[in-house]
Amino acid sequence: WRATIGASNGGNIALYLAVAHPRLFGKVGVQSSNVQPSILEALTNGPRLDLKFYADIGKYDIPVLIERVGHLKEILKQKKYLFEFREINEGHSWGNWSAHLSDILEYFFPFPGTNTGSRSEDR
Image (tube, rainbow, N blue to C red; front, side, top):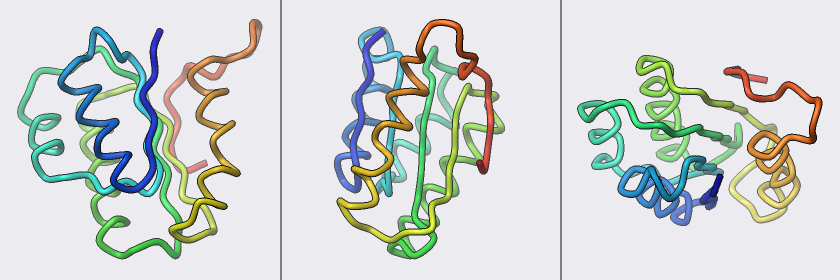
């Protein structure tokens, strides 16, 4: 039931925590994440973990981060993870992340009677 969430380098830390300890963190949310190659490799070559993901990236974000989050999205799709991905019309800023934090929380912890647990992409 726990989630770990982070933005930019904090997103990479959140991913590391979830991949290293999937029984402690069943949900991981990343915004404009600096997804390190070692995390991508672990998700690609390791067993499919019991994790639910949320990832977003700004259209005007740092180019290398756009690329890294794109790779993460493809791996999640290939491994059939439950995930939500959003590309937001923003850049690399706290204003962007704070404005969308409620999206992550509602995806991970929906109100009773709502159906937000299904896999979706590019909302």
